[in-house]
Image 1 (tube, rainbow, N blue to C red):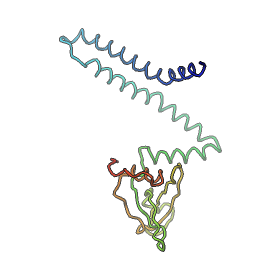
Image 2 (tube, rainbow, N blue to C red; image 1 turned 90 degrees about the vertical axis):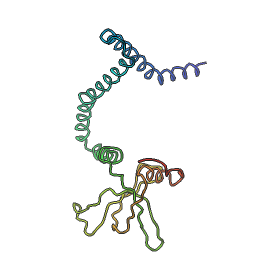
Image 3 (cartoon, rainbow, N blue to C red; image 1 turned 120 degrees about the vertical axis):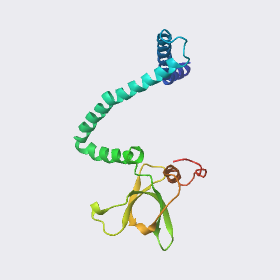
Image 4 (tube, helix red, strand yellow; image 1 turned 60 degrees about the horizontal axis):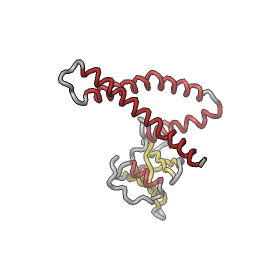
Length: 191
């Protein structure tokens, strides 16, 4: 009986935020719909819904700009001052920013010949095409090779002529690599 009560309470924790949100949105919709019904005669169906969606979206935008963004900036400044934690945090932040942020770096999947004798090839992503800042001479590019089933990988500097760009979306290449090539149906996926 205790287990059933435990699972019931767990279920409430899962659905309560969604249920409360839906209820609040419904009440806002009714309020806005009734408020504008007095001004618009005849009644325009869906006007309350449209106004509710626009208002909630504007509130979300303002809330993220006014509250969340400054809070994240303060948190970043604090973390960067911590000696050991910053050495882990900054590279991880940069990695995830490159992976899913605005400055996506993993958008050019390539096939790289890594061994001419055995014709060994690996799938990776070009992360930098110009390595002059590092003092690397010759036409070389930086290729990131993610590991299967892990958020880690290796970075190789290879001759550009060893790289062949793949004509597939980067999401498909990443899925193929991260699953160790176990995923077969990936050709119809959009980028």
